[in-house]
Length: 161
Image (cartoon, rainbow, N blue to C red; front, side):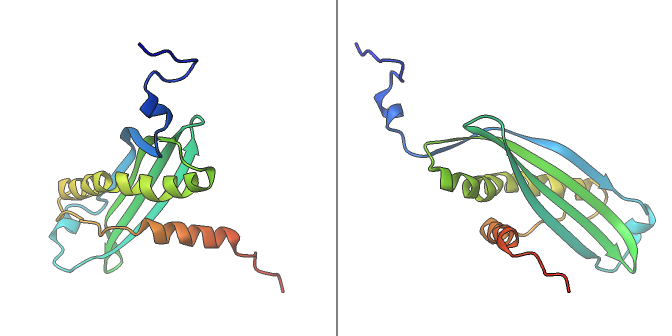
């Protein structure tokens, strides 16, 4: 028989290492537009596809946070839009026993890395269901994306001449 004084009955939990748990993941917003169908479906030229990626995070409690992975894509050929896709795929994560200085990088790098494969599949299926070949997104370097964001925040504002 073990007794505890307001703590966990499991001694291993009291000494647990860093933890990142996925509590939920979900489509928060999804939009697919095929404004020039059916003409856009009969194009024989390879479209120019532009993809943008953004990651945001907001705390929900001292240990939980919602992380959003926003993917936006636009395919054009000869100045004509073939399709637009916007996806906000989010997850709720529990972060425990992580030093405070590591929480933000964890949320902005590891959390979207866990969300990305599911978001990639949703984009591919949506584009395919729109009548086009599936759009298979290349893997994203979330470390570089995070470093870019940190550099932008730390950069001094341009001086006015």
